[in-house]
Length: 621
Image (tube, rainbow, N blue to C red; front, side, top):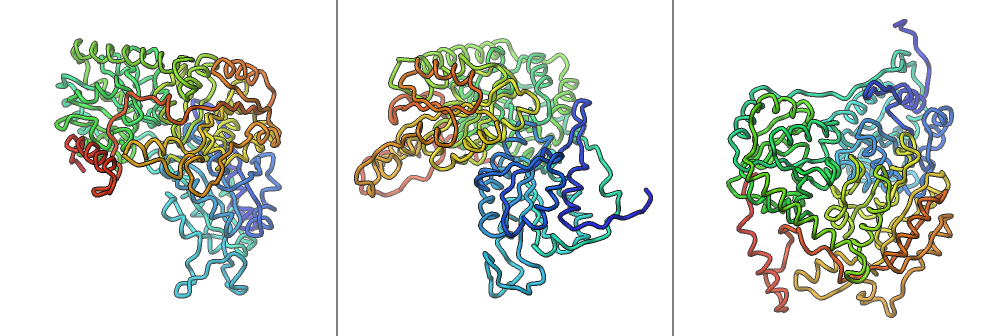
């Protein structure tokens, strides 16, 4: 390098650095930062806004309607690109930044890269206290942005322009690291954003990154292979890490070579096609009878790319107490959970190494046949469960209609409430990597915002396909403004708004634990003198979308066909029953707190019934 410098503001240096970063995936080189989502305020408009203006063609900036939804969109964008690309979010100091915290938590829980560039109070403190500043009398260095330390994988406050020379590469390394991937937060004091420094030009030379693939330790491979090779009833749990590693082909080949049944986590949905004979179904609380029957009987379980959260493990009641676990994971923390035999490393390389070490092994034919028979029974249940006319309008029926009519490469997005469970249990995967069910943070409001972010990403690679969002009325009312965003930016979505009159899935949990319906369904809110429904069709139409109501599964099908042909976002509203129509099979036990004492006999009886399954809970750490 020449050793020459260029004088830039802190904000200009950040933007120029981001524009110079590329990534190579399967021989194709593209910019690692796809752009950003931004809402400007006094904390970021004058300096960071000035810097972004000059790069608006290189780093397109999408103006959000709400900072939280911007973060959700960024998370969905990163998930679509399998964590190989990310978006930044910029928010002003104070409430704008505070609104990003929920989205940061979602990205943290789901191990998704998202860069936050957020305004902060003046470093000099000369104008203190400033508008929207939180004052801590005993610690003037403490502010709102410090709260993001709990929901960031990398956190820094830029207190001098030269600091970004170290901080930016460190933040980028976190965003692209398979083991530590998650959100990165940079607090940008308003004065420091505009301060200048003579930066080395080499900081802004284009650089091409590649995702690190760590091979597992040979000793760990040998130990894992020996355990699996002696298994009589082996099973594979396929998590989201399989897709992030690009290890779908290796997973499928490994399973077929050794005749080992595979079950999927929520994050791992669409690792295998529904028609694959070794795909035994989704596991856990929102799973399938087939996967859970296999899990209960398995003696050795190979977990690949899963953090083994409670919905996967049935709060650790889904498995035999003496079952042994092997966990292949890029993150050491995840690989060692619940006394697993760890294989710390990349899923693709790990499966390849295991395959070599297990040459000649096949699971007993009776075991594989048992798993396949269980899947056939589950397929028959799902076929009846999604059948129109079998009960009042239901989530499952709507899912079945869309499943039958969509393109195999359309992307499905769902999140909190009852729909994640219903999509996980009833969706029949048509193509690999086409399902995004956000249940790591189970975050209401992700659906439409995530759909917008996913559609932005999808339009970069598969513009002729659709992003299909399943959302309940509760989540829609919480965060719907990106219907407008999608129309403004011409990023078409198809939104299935299934209205059950409130927070029906929590009402269901309330009832299942012996409690009376209270404050979940609109009709059961004590502060609502007279309940009424929202005109969602009129509301969506007012935001520029095409919108219509369907009163039956048949009408939904015709409306969906019209939505496929439409040139902009379409919202289809269908009422579903709040009490009937739930998927009743396939659930494992799930630990929730229930009252040990109560005046209600129903609550006491439900507590005893709930606790009766606790004896199955594994005590591993």
